Amino acid sequence: MSKTLEIFIDADACPVKEETYKVAFRYDVPVSVVANAPIRIPRHPLIKRITVNDHYDAADDYVAEHAHVNSIVITADILLAERCLKMDATVLGPKGTPFTKDSIGSALASRAIMSDLRAGGDAVGGPAPFQKADRSRFLSALDEAIVRLKRQG
Image (cartoon, rainbow, N blue to C red; front, side, top):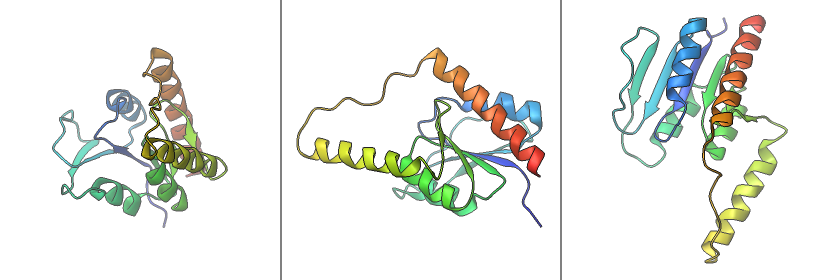
């Protein structure tokens, strides 16, 4: 028996929680908001707050352990994305960029290079600031992912 469609948000620094709720409400899809500390969520039967302990990877561990083929995971964390892809989950970054089994290798390599540069004392910039176009791209990608999974289910 397959699991039902659901969305997991790696919520501690997610800039698209409100957008996720709106799309989830439209499609009647439950959302689990996973964080290390209590986060304000709407009072709605589709939204569930999951507060894990403050262990460094506790939120990631929870999401990765519960991700499945009919889930959508929203995260900017490349290592978490890789773990969820191994569970056949659909994974979206907050800017709407999908993580796929084909793209995760280059994302991990880029992450490793940037980490090495920072460790060596190089001043490297972070990600580009979140733009209105990113929000729009995310909404479109989440909508498409839900429609695809509902069709498959």
